[in-house]
Image (tube, rainbow, N blue to C red; front, side, top):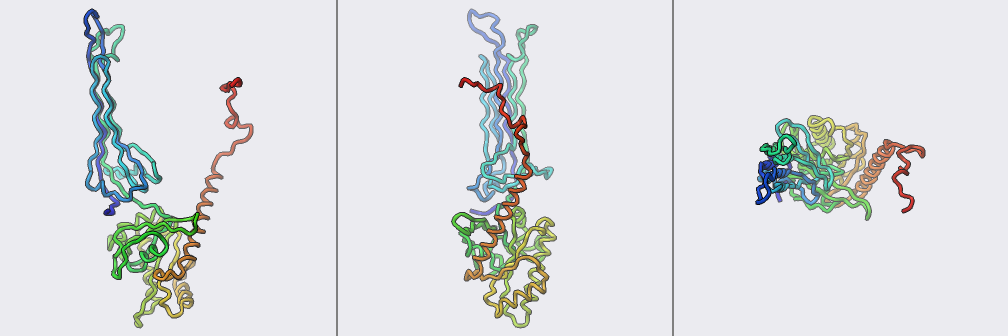
Length: 371
C-alpha cells in the first residue's frame, strides 16, 4: 500500500429534518389538535484512531464526506428518523487541522480515540410544541438546521520511541532490519528509502520499543532539497534520535575523520534549521561500518575529540550485527528510565487525599444499611 502522510478533506454534517405542521383528523374526533412531529437530526462525522491503519492514502482520493440528512417530521406525532452518522478511521498519530485557519483541532495519539469532526444539524420542531392555552391550533413549525461544514488538513506523524537520522546510504535501513522485524528496501544507491519504515525491537521477552527509519537527509533538506524534509515531522513524537554515520571512507585522498565530521555537522545544521524542538531532542551518535576501519578505538576517540561530542557514542556494523545488541540494551534502559521519570512526575502532581478529606469519605446518607 502506498504511504501517504498528508491529505485534505471536506466534512459536512447532515441537515436536520423539518418539523411538521399537521392536525389530527379522525372521524368523530373534532378539534383533534396539532400532531406534527419533529424532524430528525442530521448525521454527524466522527473520527477514530485505528492502530491497524498506517497511511492516509484512502483520504487522498475520497475527499468529501457528508452525513445523511434527517427525515422530516410527519403527522400523527411521527418524528423523523435521524440521519446515519459516518465514522472515518485514521492512523494513530494523525493530527487534524482546520485547512482555512491552520488551527490544530485534534491529535489522535492513542488507539480508539474518537472525536467529532462535524455535527449534524438539529431537527426542526413540529407544531405540537407550539400548542398553548391561547393558541389551540398552531401552524408554526421550524426548519431543520444545516450541519457543520469544515475543510480539514490531515497530517500523519508516526509514533515511535526512536528515530533514525543520517545521510543517504548511511546504513539506517540495514540497521533497522538487523535489530527489528522491519524489512525495508536496501540497495547500494542513495534514496532507497522513500517513506518511513517502522520496526518493533524486542530487547527481551517483556520489553520492546519502536524504531522509525526515515529517508536520508542531505544539505538543504530544511529548504526542501531531497526527500528527508518531507518526513522530518515524524521525528517530533520520538523520545530519542540515533544519528547514524557511515565511517567507511576508503578514498586515500580524503581524511575519514574530517569527512565524518562534515557529514555529522551537515545533519545537525539541518535539524537546527528545521525545528529548534527537534534539535534539542536527545541524540546519540552511532558510527556504522566501523569494522572497515583499521583501528576502530583510535578512530572513535579522534572523531569524538574533533567534534567535541559530549553525548553517547556507539560503534556498530549494521551489516554483521556487531555492536547492535549492546546499543539496543542501552536504548531500552534509557527509555525505561524516561518513562519511570514521567510516571513519577504524574504521581507527584496528583492531588493527595487526607483521611479526613470529605472527598475521601462516602456519603452515608445515600447508603441503605439494610442491604
